[in-house]
Length: 251
Image (tube, rainbow, N blue to C red):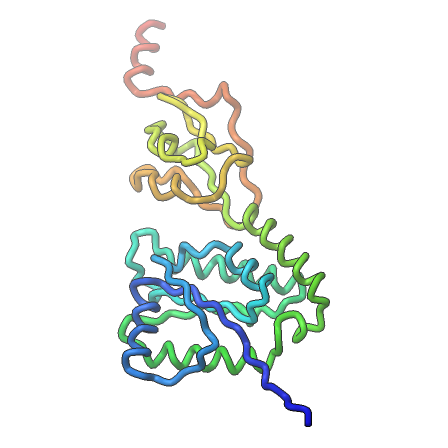
């Protein structure tokens, strides 16, 4: 007698500590019923989910990835990380389409700490959807070895191209805050010198963007687009108002 087993998808969930993880915890405490197919990784913010985590999960045989965050406008951090997570998810889905992987295998949802039943419904719905799709790769009719190669290439590509950072020379005040905080020393500049980001060294961590004083707003996020070329070294000196007056007196 042949015993047939129903396909049970493997789901990996990256859940925001403050809202979605708390919602999942409430679902457990309240004993709301939902499939046990999901394995959870708690992150402090959905904006900290790196695209490489997603593609690596798929390469390891995970059938679906769920990112859970706070509702838009309710992020616990000033950087609004959930909006960044939403942008990142959209780009990952586009890349999944290009390599022939169903983009519906990646899902982002907003769940508050009081929405345990919503979390249970999302997992139930996602599990059902993945069952209909079938195992990763098989459901798309793709060779699994080739899919793995494509996913590794996608991981490498998206890490380089997803988000770039650029310092606007017209707004930079040479305060040196971003320069000092850059963990990989990708920013060059100095006192009275417009700062420039070396795109080869930049790892896209966004610390420069977060540390630039809001009154300057000199660091710009550039999603998946070419970065403007750096200004020539001879044009990087900033003439302060006092120095300009001194030069004019001497002349």
